[in-house]
Image 1 (spheres, each protein chain N blue to C red):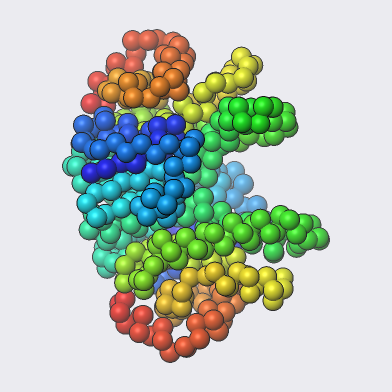
Image 2 (image 1 turned 90 degrees about the horizontal axis):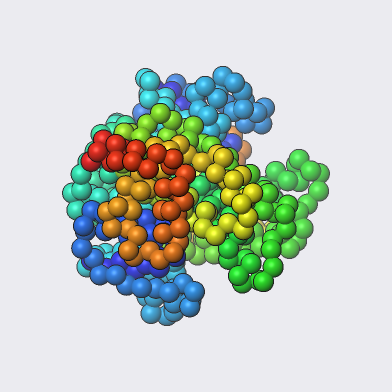
Length: 242
Length: 242
């Protein structure tokens, strides 16, 4: 099985993280987005959509990170809590992985674009007005992540970790990468999901994540550890979810 | 089982159409978006997201149309082709229902907003530049719908209809509603999915759709019939998919 990825992309990190965590063997095919390799003729033969991640399993080619995660979960018979067979639990994973596209994913991407990519490429800041709108949209999504999905549970769907958590974690990480000021950092942090959910990030990292991810991953891990307050408490979440 | 819907919304129409087509009994709860009923305190108790569709099955509440469709398919044991149990076929339904959010859904919604809602609410047209960008984005999505998903098959995932088709059909319908000029209409039509796929729309309508849908549905049906050219040919598609 081959996975075509660039770990700068959150959906790619979700697939990578999931496969590594679950010890699913795969050939890592690096598609360097910054060099436009996704637009090459060779890559277009694999996927006309010209985006990563892509899974190739024999003659079967699949795009879209959440579809790939569900495929891997079913094919590799991973522990049930990652993608539960139970009708309602599975529906809740599907609900989250549908909701996130036009919410957390869109808004985290925009904040990352405005905070990090835009200044790097254009050599200037986006307007305060645009940034404020992007941050407000992201805050609204983070509020819903907490109030609708997380509520009083340890993870987004139940008290056990699921692929929905992996999908969410990589987006929140990306939006936090390289914030331009402490004030902006605080604004974001004030509405982020609760401490217990942050522990799931750390739980995931502690499998195998950090080694492959570069500074985006390490920064997010350090920030999560710092913000979690009780540095030992995540172990409780881990023991309850494993 | 209760379904909270406003049939002006494409995702609501997908759920309604699917339930009606598969003869799944439900109580229709009308949430009138134009009157802001989704923002009422009463509705917020049901769903904090304040959007439709919502499914309520006993004490279980589910949002997101694609999650609801998959839940209904599994719970009501509908014919396999709607949401195949086969690993790869199911992955392709998941791939489409993930892809559509930031592609066909986003772009059809924007064209509908610019063509229909904006002039009705603001009393003026959007700029040509904005409209051209929206149409170009939509054309790109329609090209991918055809070249990646439909290809040489009768329906998006196989030669049998699946819930992916229902999700796509309602979006294409919406974008076609009330186009402002014949030229714009032609521009859109030139890159739309092939005749055979359009037959699936008609196939669906012929179950029970049209009666409940008002003019958006009837317009789309008439347009599809007109554009399909061979008005009898869809029956072949129906017989091969049922």
